[in-house]
Length: 306
Image (cartoon, rainbow, N blue to C red):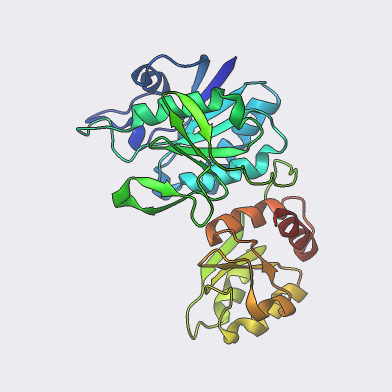
């Protein structure tokens, strides 16, 4: 069995005056559960990550499992946008049967108690475990396993992520994976191409509809709106949503509370985000539009995620 470790730097690799390589991190994590091939990939800090970098990582995960026949892939990533890159990798992985694990650190190697080495050791153990093969991308932090579809960092002071309102996928205990819930259904097969020009807008009272038309005038091929708990958006936006839908520019409405409804906007042509956060709905829309097709293609894709 051979695993691939893709190291992107960021907090997990930060020393006082240098950055640890992927090989350095592997040595700090202790004896791996299988042979590991290491690749270092240059990336921006995760708080400033680019779509180009996220796509490069997601595509490398896909090819590593499908073409290079690695049994599993571990990606070290900054925690600020880890959940998003992991979900994009999940969407592009298709039916790949290998383990896909993203990990990182809240405390650098220069800290009194760095968490990176233990997180990497747990991530490698997870990627090598048959229990997660075919389960899609998994986020591994602090010994906890979260499906990439549900993982979210909600409190940096707690040094952890959550799957709420869904259950956590499992834990890593003494180097062994213990799944405590069923992985989410796999997304539909997708090509490696995506439409990166998709806008994300958080709605607010009295929001002018010109914000929607401005982003599409600037080239956005789709728009994700984050609405209220029930998925509603201000009535001022109704006309713009209908207009964009008629122009074959999909408008996806996500709920800030991860509910599946989209209120009255469905009859205007809007598409529900199927409980995805607004950030992840944007990634799903990018993938949905990768092969073209506009509103019809996007609607069919999101319906398949339900």
